[in-house]
Length: 212
Image 1 (cartoon, helix red, strand yellow):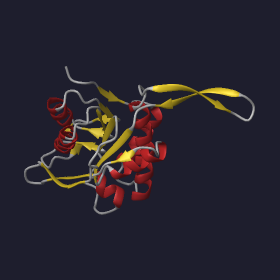
Image 2 (cartoon, rainbow, N blue to C red):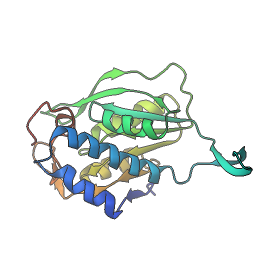
Image 3 (cartoon, helix red, strand yellow):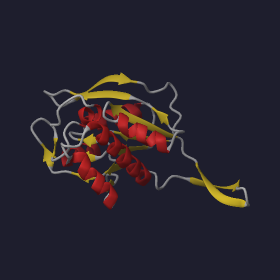
Image 4 (cartoon, rainbow, N blue to C red):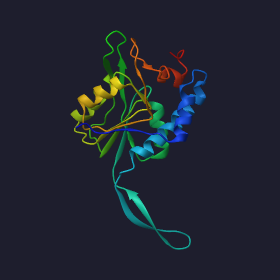
C-alpha cells in the first residue's frame, strides 16, 4: 500500500492558492504567496515530529516547552523549489539545504540531472523534497532516487499543485514517501503542463517568461 496523499484544504490556503493561479498575479506577489502557502504546507507535514519535553525559565517562573528531535533537510528541486525552501527556512532556520538541479526535457518529458549539491555526509533524519508542481512526476522520482542512493531513509514530498499522473508515478516508484499538496488538478496537457495549474512556477516566481 502506498503512503498517503495529504491535500491541505484550509480556507486561508485555498484563498491564497486561487490568487497564485491567476495569470494577473505579478511575480512579487506570486513569490509572497509561495512563501505563505509553503509555510502552511510545512506545518502540516511536520505535525508528527518528535517533541522532547523540556523546561525553560521565563522572567517569572519555570514553563514547560518542547524541543524537536529530528534533524531536517530541505531538498529544493531547482529552480522552482527555491521559493519553497526559503519560506521553510524562515520557519525552521536549523535545517540543512541540499540543492538538486533537474529539468524536464521538453521532447521526452524525462528529467535531466544537471546539479547535485548533496553533502558527503547526510546528517538529517528527515528530508523534504520541494517542488511546487508535481506534473509528470519525473523530477520528484529522480530526486528521491538520488536521496535513497545516499541512504536517506525518511523522505516526504511537498508540492503546491499536482496532476493525477504525477501522483501515480511518484507512488509507483516510491510507495513509502508521503505526499503533501494544496490541490490535485484535472490532468496534464500535451506539453506536460498541469491543467488548470498555474503555468510555469519557476518563470512566474522569477519573472523569466510569460505564464503558460
